[in-house]
Length: 471
View 1 (cartoon, rainbow, N blue to C red):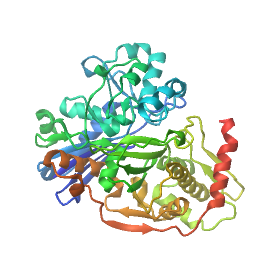
View 2: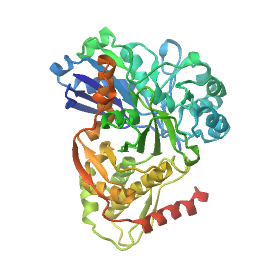
View 3: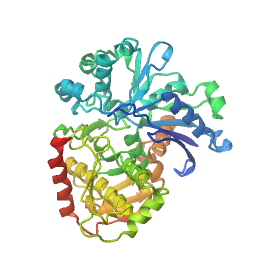
View 4: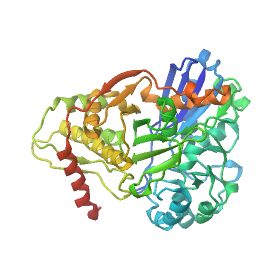
């Protein structure tokens, strides 16, 4: 039995996977986000730890006792700031926080030279540059910086360790060389002594502390390096070789493609990062608000929940000139790199009802993902789909039409990163080959494009261009 834990933005997921690769148990504990100021997005790391314990303890005790290894996945880019005695200095600054735009401008040229990636406010390094300028007391007290899943690793094992895929998103990693960049650390007033050690995602990073193992009803097992949520999701989806790709439809929206080498494309806002396996890399496009937009419009319209909102949207049928939605509720990354971009409904009339607004949001998110797919400029035969938003057949067809690529939905798609973390735990313990463990799960459904909404897509893109000067 292999345990995977994913420290997400909206919840912590824990899954148990057996030797056949089947998920035998899973549980999710919800999380909340604090937004104390415009562009800010924060969480309390103690909330992650409490939710992690609750999620693991909710799994059947007899299955937990058979666990042979634990793997971690988590939201990327978040800055967990530790002082003396590993005390947390302030709330963690998250991946969708946009406060550090001016710091990105200063770091930009160095980032391109030493990491091959554009400096974006979501990345970790600009957050520390902001901290140095705006909260100098916290910066002066800083002893270590950890990513979200690596803070949970510290609580589980006592080790300050990260791995290559998640570290790639800090803007401190020499991604091609798979090591910390002294130049990028110096640019933010830090040095390598304040960074965690680095392992590959499929390597052991430490052992579960005996007291924690006892509290959680687990054996004293190894903890794998794991992966950032997208790389771990790729492991769970079997996307490990060049030419394979997936769409992650979660709080954010990501299109991820595996590659054999480091292939930066910063001009299009594409991320080029290490994969969670040795000697492998990947590229990805990122939109900051995907299912987050759906959650928002459901709160706005008062639907009882996601199923009710999706059913109402589907029932709207064909409409004459329906509204267009820009999905930039937290700014945007690929391809715009615009933290000040805003969401927008365009084309409202007296006939626009709540269901039409939900339908516009589903389409707007799909068009935002299409912008990311075009930025990647890859010739893909299909996209596997993972993430909590992958459960809707109606949205699946909208996405297939917008992306003009066949979409494949597979077993366990809603918990892909946690499942991938469990697979990485298995690799770390058994030493098996990735090809033997990281296979594609069984296909459940396939959606082919049935229409090409190119005129709507052109209007969507023109709307952003015309509004951008006013954001």
